[in-house]
Length: 355
Ligand code: MRU
Image 1 (cartoon, rainbow, N blue to C red):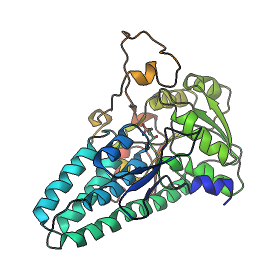
Image 2: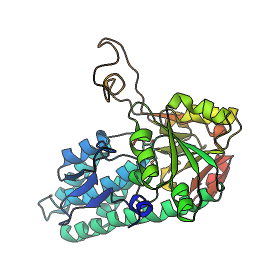
Image 3: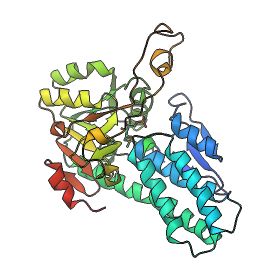
Image 4: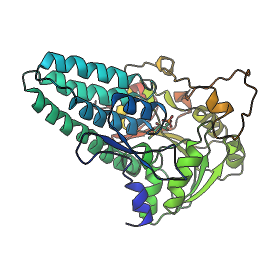
């Protein structure tokens, strides 16, 4: 396999050989080591998602889908009602691991629907259907990422500078990724881009994952600290911004990794198009605006201590560590999904969305 394909087709989340476990690449160990983790228990699955060992909105949905199939096989009963009760308990537990990315609850609800729609079948047949459903979730994501990559690529040209924030590449999805997908696809077709990857404080997904994926794939990537984006844009080095999303509201407000809204504000100031890329499952029409999106708050330790040899602030210093922010729809030039490119006004254009 060539280096580019090795990245675009990376096996980040899969079922174990006996289908009794989920095997993931531990993203917290990258870029220094490629280590696989085998997840079997509810707690192992919960912790892997909570600790960002598996991360990125589509990837956590896929992992949770596989996880429910694995857990369903451990429910030792032939009785449908007992099975459903235990299944729901596991589902609610995994769903509580991270609140912002809608893909998690979306995938879990799909798995639950399989159980609820087949109450008349023997439990072992329901489990077999769950196996099919979780594979389908991943297969659909592959196709969606490919289509998103094609739509995204239609918006840029050879030689363009692209700025991205966080990581929305193959590690965060199934294949190709969303925000990075057009860049990998363009590379396959012989195009060259100059990518600026924000390091993405505090958990450094841009440094650890995005620059890793792009560098390994042979794409020209330059890592910058988050506070350098303005200068890079002012220099005229950026022709478009591509970012992922964790939940998009009905009016087009889009939640993504903390710092994304700042990038959008800068891009608008410098008249650079700012695109949000994600599967249509990320659009949550139950949220009217971004104000309805729950933002995950994480530990102050991630700011003060993680990745440093010694704490970088006094123990008693307060920290505010929201994991996501919401970019106002007015700053977004287009929302690129597998169903096409949606433009403002989003409340109108989303009426054409097939759900
Ligand atoms: O906290 P993370 O690393 O899971 O946040 C991920 C992001 O914000 C991504 O941009 C988003 O999930 C899209 S991944 C295709």
